[in-house]
Image 1: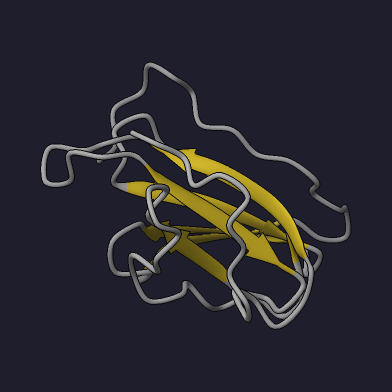
Image 2: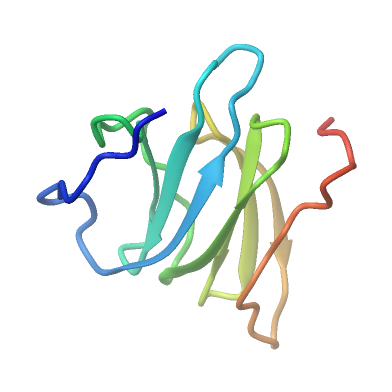
Length: 119
């Protein structure tokens, strides 16, 4: 895998990117991917070789995305937003899998347990 050097993508997000995470390769996808989350309330998936969009954006947050994590199996990921929700979504489709409400506290980070299998 080769990470694109100093390449940039115009219009990658409508607002500032606040979070990034690697998605490991999966059985159906032999290469790792890059996730980015931004204040535009979306999570986007990118091919690291050419920074091309690799899937539709994951939507559903009402405020900016501040943290991302991908499951070690590479099939699901989670996004944390300033809206106090944690959303788990399918990496390839962007479809929501689960939502966790965390008010009135603010959640600023998330991480999957490295040894728990995705269901």
